[in-house]
Image 1 (cartoon, rainbow, N blue to C red):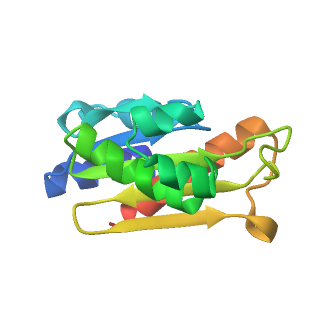
Image 2: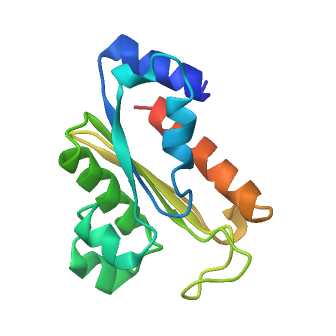
Length: 156
């Protein structure tokens, strides 16, 4: 199960800390995790990196990745997760990037989303693109993105 409560309990049981780099979710992942009593034992913090240049300066995404693939890409999500994990000193890094809508961004339609989870030895990315793009309006896409990254975290 990947509810915030279940995720926090699992992190506590495993003795792991977590940090998040969020773009389209704008802090919703950290808000979901910190809504759980006891989450201070595992949540190190998070950064909202809405602007592309902040993905590099705060989340540690290499400029070459942003130049080659753009801010809405699986490679960007992976780099954000790894970067925030290292920069905030967490065992696990989470990342969300994509297009919540209502308008397309850089040629990507609303619902295009990439989420990532990074540990010291692994980075997992789940992408929602094309026919698998997340449906709904802006708030539905953002809420589904939070659920998606927590689900991916529960697999680690």
